[in-house]
Length: 306
Image 1 (cartoon, one colour):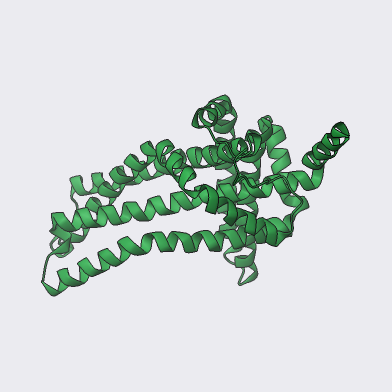
Image 2 (image 1 turned 90 degrees about the horizontal axis):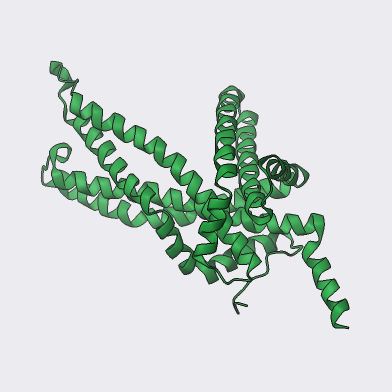
């Protein structure tokens, strides 16, 4: 067993779950991130391409002279549209990878007491691929419903905003807990969704507050990550303006903004993966509170040893 292994199958208090999440990151951050980069190589490449197309398209639009009817550039529009299409693809691919990889990672961590093996994670993802795709499609419908409801709630002052946040955290929890049910016990899509919904509704305030706290903390981590490229871009823009450089037509500016925007997207994608790690930790806590499987196993072992 890994000496730094942290048992997740415990009946912990709310504060202890938060503490467990950060202890998990403390001991597994490097190993998790290394594997994460390997599994997300394709999405990183797509993100760089998407960033280049969107930045090039946007800067092309910014450089056009609309006063003289020069607002229609097919190449510029094509870059922008292609970038938007790839961005949608990235959202789908990264959602598939982030939820699957993070869930499989936590499940493998628990099942083998901290001894993570990449091959087992990959095999677990392949074994559940059909269930994952079906759930992603169902999740897409749920998101569409969420957007419609959010638009309606937007007309209600204050209470509507609070309801939107509550609905957002609830939906995230159902997604995260359902994915963990798929990977931890290999449940079918119906059983996993039912368990994710049940855990969320029966522990509603704990789950929503947990999502809020983790969301704030992960956002702080994200802001810390993107602060470096943001400062670099800010310094570059300042000196470019001082030197009367035409940023909209500068090749170097395009490279800087492309890398900066890519860093921005990748940091939020990584934060999503960390969020699923947190829901994996929450899942095992809620599972143990309901079923007492790990505690019963320990009691049975005491009986055998005696």
